[in-house]
Image 1: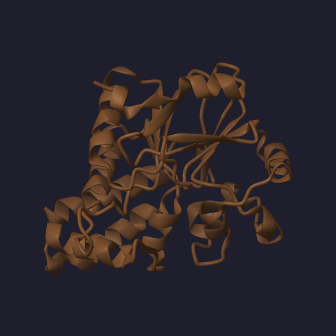
Image 2 (image 1 turned 120 degrees about the vertical axis):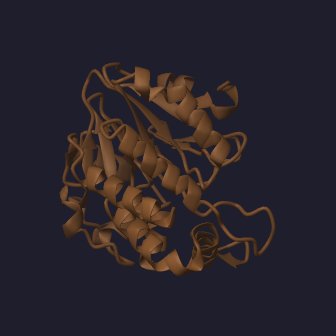
Length: 283
């Protein structure tokens, strides 16, 4: 199983880097596409399975799905290992089955795992719990090989996506109050040029939380976007709307949601909100 998992992660990484709609670290969807945007999944297997059921990619060739923040699940008990590497592997397999339709975006938790940047959540170090879970699933003798393959997979993720009807998809946006240090052109750089270290442009983008109307105006002009569909910030009821331009989605719990968008349609914020779908409604 370990060799198969390594091969899957590396194959998916190669497919990410050679995605035919990718330019630099940006995905550019076409007018005939539908995009299904998710929120943070954090190992929520049931919602992932419902997403697969909803998307029906095998019979919907114009449908694309975006995944991000797949790892660092909420364990059943304090100190329990984190088994979200299983969902990450299933997502990588999905990419190999539907290479032109399944896509990923860089997120702060995946980036932290790649960089071994400790995140404390609920009194535990989630990166350590993740590695313990990998050891239990794949065997301690295979941990290094699996983690190296996961690192290559994570490093292959693009930073953002854009649809022709002026919608921008990302895990988050840079912090408005540190924007003077942000490289706004990082989304156009190829993966091998990106600085993934703490404090770099990728780090600033996926960790940003404090956004302003002025920031959105600037980013909207630069990225040719009216609306921003994000994750990163927890949402107990599934989503939140900010400034009539941002929709923040969450997919990590039983009230989680996703958002299917037709790239040919012109939307206002109310129209986008009406499209939000709960995973609980997928039968």
